[in-house]
Length: 181
Image (tube, rainbow, N blue to C red; front, side, top):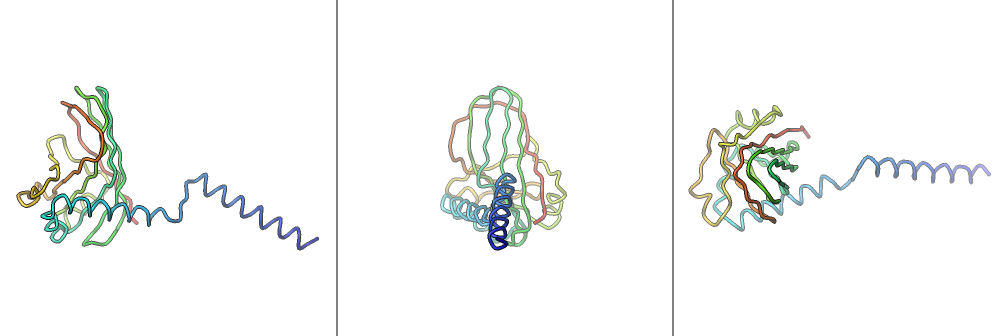
């Protein structure tokens, strides 16, 4: 009887732990999946423009957002999650949030990479309240575009459209948060 009770208790404990971790969204392979998405994204950027390699080789750090979604009907917003690297080593996670107001309609998906020229710029990003203003410009990646691109105020931003269509004449910026690994 004791052995049977122990078996039942073990089964119940496993069921409870499994249920709680499922409810909490715990995924033991989440980090591995995110790293894989980043690798695929970097490969896509380099296939589209091999001259981006100079940024990966020379930047002090960078953040890769594999999937950023954006949608709008007059008021718009966007969101994405990414991984932050310092000298090629993963150091944390970042989120990108975007808000805009103006004449706009549609939805769009894209990938984004932000390169940080030096330690000072990356450290400023890591403080957690980093923003790119509406005046900051991202370069849409095409063959050879990175060869003629440079940093502006210590950052270089590149995007790669994925899906969707969006027409806009809007004002807005991007805000980022950082979470240490």
